[in-house]
Length: 63
Image (cartoon, rainbow, N blue to C red; front, side, top):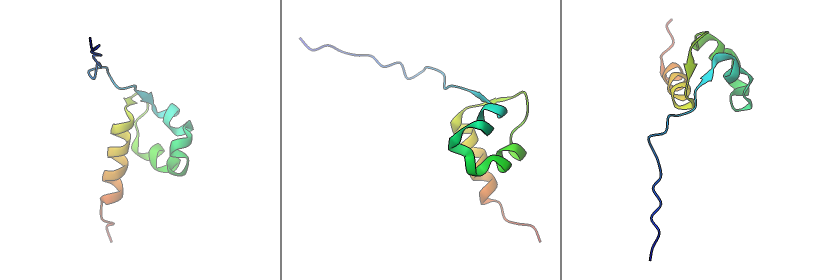
C-alpha cells in the first residue's frame, strides 16, 4: 500500500524586518538600496523584497 504525503503549501512565508534584511548576507551588496526602499516597522517576505529591488532596478534614470 502506498503512503500519501500531503504537503501544506498554504503555510505563510516567513517575514523579516528591515533590520533583519539589512543584516542578511544574501543582501550584502544591496544594503544601501534596501535601506532606501524598505520601511521601518514593516515586515517583508523574501519574495516581496526581490520584487521591490527588481522594480527599482528596472526604472529609467531621469535626466
